[in-house]
Image (cartoon, rainbow, N blue to C red; front, side):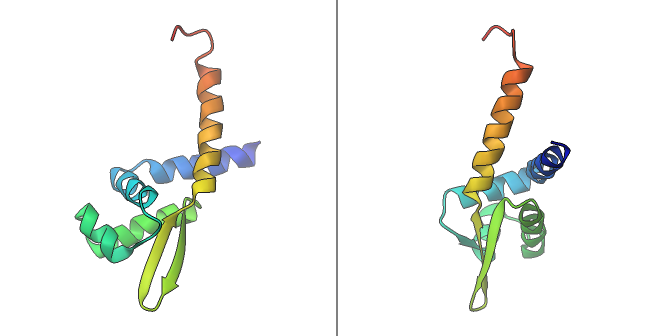
Length: 100
């Protein structure tokens, strides 16, 4: 249980930045994106985008692969689905007895 909470905290911390949320939303709408494309859609420097992607990678929220000289990233949909379920349970527990 404690290990699950630690993993959940890492994922939530990775998502707790506006630039990373923007990157995640972009990746969610694409099969895969190269860093160059993400730089163009976020108006951030390549090094900044790469640093944010590194954080998302460490949290297992994105996958990475190389093709020739390009680095490609895609969303880890299974991890997002699991996190969604976990948060749904937590919110339901927290909202017991609320009028909604």
